[in-house]
Length: 258
Length: 298
Image 1 (cartoon, chains in turn cyan, brown):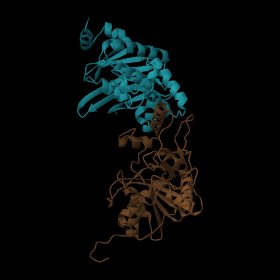
Image 2 (tube, one colour):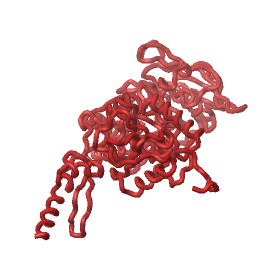
Image 3 (tube, one colour):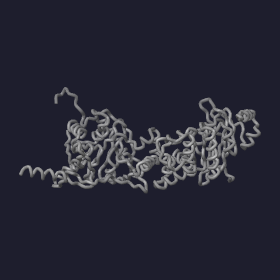
Image 4 (tube, chains in turn brown, purple):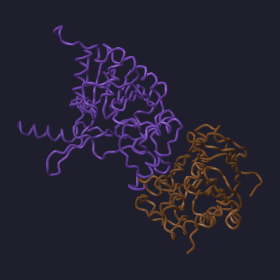
């Protein structure tokens, strides 16, 4: 880790009319760090994620990102073309529902290759080679490269979505409930895979989840949200083992024990 | 005509409408390949019969123009005959089937074999102007993609073609990039005709009536068909020559002759074929017929 953050979030608020989506969120994210945002449904986790990833315009506050040239840019003062370019090269976004992040009617290979073609790759053989390599890294066998994601299971789709996002070597990945809707054994495998990839590639990631086990396994630090406010913020192990806020204590004690 | 019949303005459309369409055309020429929205009118023919092309033609035609109309390369099919008759009636202009004599050529699905020259205008009838439409159904999104030059998706389609069929299997409406900027649908012409659009001496106008869009390729503009480095763009090739005029290297139509597998390949461009025959070129099938005819006479 370096001593300059990758992302600086200051005073981000989002109001839906008079209702609060999220209010006055401040944090910094360093390269290679995984941050989990946890909280119950409706606590503003996804609103915050969307505000950070430029999918939603915040009402107030600023989000600054350190570009590859080392300069910080305020995401909401960039042109739309620059933002979209950033989103498909230096960033990734993994949706809870893979159908939202994949093109369901084109083959797995084309799904992985799309970002490469979007940045100007024009050699079919090389694109296919890269796609095959990435399918291998997310444990999808190479003979499924020409199958459409419609023919894939939920876990495979989610892994394909991850490959599609990581193919351009992003530095920051947003994940919205990446294991939602998957059964526990598939969840475990996916978490294992994501943890491996994040370590290997030195990715920074912001993971939204309501599952504290996911936060425990993936993240270094976590933010606990309630009613749009950040109520606790700290190292994952500290927050989970020694929760300070009453709400966090309630959340931690609500984990089902088998 | 008796005075109680409603009379049409010259070339059917009223002058305000023509003015509006001419403005759209000028804008389209100024931004090659960009789809300009226009207030498309109801025309006395169904959508899909060339209402866009007819409106463009009606707006640019003058009393001194000579009009040629082609449908799938032919001058004598229903669409071509009726549009030609329409302009004879409403604009009283001279019409022709000869490519070289025409000043305005309205076309559906083909570009004439004979090289177009400076001063000629080729008007295309376009069913779906948006090249990204079947990849991205949202108009708001495709407009944004054009604005930000995000054309990766177009190559995803070509990638899929190669992955499934081993080659780029798109044979018509093959996407092109105009003047290094906008990706454009050249209307459902065979990809055989794509190279003719590149650096053409003639002005090319595209009208889509139902979709209410006009776009253009000005003369001497670069038109490049999209492809991959290792799967370059190729046009169709034919093993046979035209059965009637013996032409080689032209676009041929297959005509089924009987139910025993008999077939012939003839020029899709009827004017080109007739012109060659007038100049004494004879294809394989025509030669056979004339031999038979002589035998019968003897």
